[in-house]
Length: 374
Image 1 (cartoon, rainbow, N blue to C red):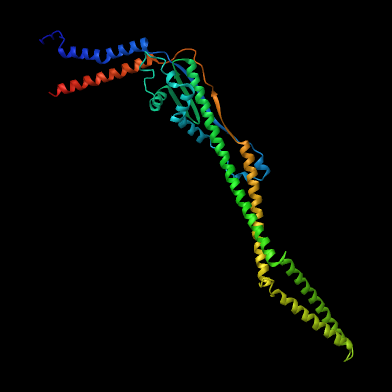
Image 2 (cartoon, rainbow, N blue to C red):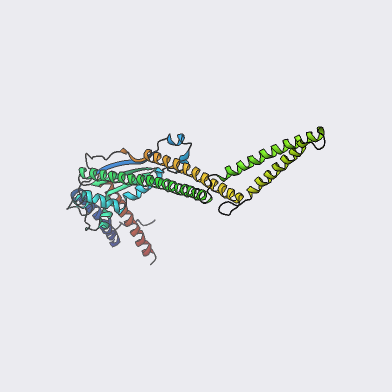
């Protein structure tokens, strides 16, 4: 017959476990509950939601044949939203809002609540740490949502409105920079094209003044016309001479006159042809002068076309800059809280209780593990 088990007795380790449970779990939870419900000051939340929108008017590029492709003024709303997301967490924004509202005064309205109230000094770094606690940012798919906490609902909405106003200001600055960049590039191209055109025209003017010729090509074409006319006359005279020799008697004076006329025409053709290689007033051959003039003409025509294209691009850039705009579209405007929702006392107490209980259980398991190894 097996002996019956004795009654369980309360050992010292059991008392130690209960005391540790009271000290590690029950006492902190009770103290936290007392603080949350007795000392923690109610906080009010203001919400804001917005996204960056970009609109560019159409019509100008269609009228000018798509020259806006040269300007490159397309906007990237996603990039602008990324910039705003970083800007809302920056020292710059905190400093701007603080200058506008005095954040230290707003977040110090709970003197009996050292945990949730502002206890930092006058440094911007302490204020930024409090900003990270009081301002929560949620970024999803190009949309930014904000939750701002304060001890007064009017203060919470004022902070939210200030964030929205400063974000709008930042977007306007980005918009102005984009416009100025697009116009500056087009303006620089136009100035460069205009300088090239002026230089080409000045070179053409200097060439004409140096050679005392308006258009050497026209002079050459005139001489070519003279030679062509003389060649036609020579051909007619040769035909007439052939007819006279076939029909007239030997010694006919008309034959001698025809031969004389043919000789004069040939001498005149040779003289006109020699003019093509003759020197101008500057000592250069006419053919070289014509080559220089044609080169200058090509440079001037290219400069004129470049200037026309640059002018059209600049007009297009200016028109598109006046049409393009970025702005903040608020789908949730700064809200005014009607009742306090923070701090979330029940949620905080539950989280703390679970954390302390897990910590206590881990400590107990470590204690028994070390005890069993002895």
